[in-house]
Length: 125
Image (cartoon, rainbow, N blue to C red; front, side):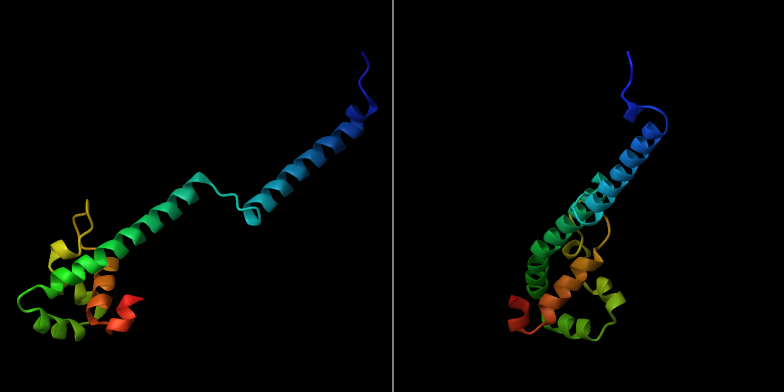
């Protein structure tokens, strides 16, 4: 049985080169403009978004619990004068620790702080 001339010699080489170049071009276009992503990238994005959603849900709870403390007004005044990297120490640990974690969340501390000390119109947004 005789092979077609396109699958013999130099033509076969050019055919394979064209197929490889087409595959590379398809992957390039797919990943950069087509919206394709690797599983690891998708997992990372989903994890970040879920953590932000949990923080958004727990920040009002933290602010309400902090406001219910007996000396909340004095603590708010002290909190407004503290540097951002020391705020974590001013909140009770159980208010700013995410479920399943053993240490306070900096993002939750910042969100709770914003709700506590922001003007009421800014806190609603």
